[in-house]
Length: 254
Image (cartoon, helix red, strand yellow):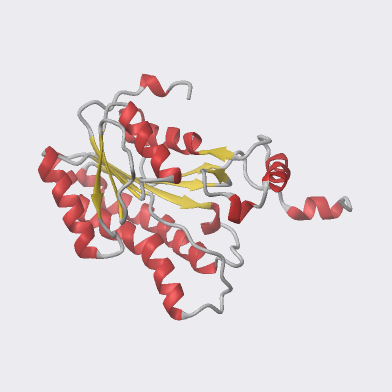
């Protein structure tokens, strides 16, 4: 992506949750190319990792595992500069799904980010600086039928972002969120349909295409850098201009 090579994160240490595949992998690889030492986590180690990226097994829905991950990375490198709370997602399910299902979705999409941020805080506060980037979704700012638990969790993540930015700003810690739109990250077949459906979706967006992992990774890179030194508590839309209001097409009879 144009401009990425101009940002240098040499010497910085980052954690990207859910960074072994999909959108998280794009983010992790972009931070590595900028010079950061990046740790990704998950329950299954990927077959290959680029130089500069390491894997640690962790289920960040578990606060004890989240703390062990953060502390191990900070101890290994002597610092922690960047935390990207990317772990998340949800299968489609009606709002009448079981309480157990609802709890599992909220734990993955909201609780994990809170745990990771809490345990990153002391390491960043001691250094007097740090950047926490939460990967949110348009599902958190508009109705999310068939993924109601996911939408509610992402809405909570946006509030958490602004609350932590206020509370931890005096410690030099910046906290921001990306409100991610319709992105082709390698696992888009189920939510977005087949290739023909994705073409139709792309044409409905103002920029006439769906997003890519690199579109989101570029925004993460910027927020990780000194170029965003006075940006905190922000909700940055990475959505190609947003989804067209459906009533406009209905009004035209299309």
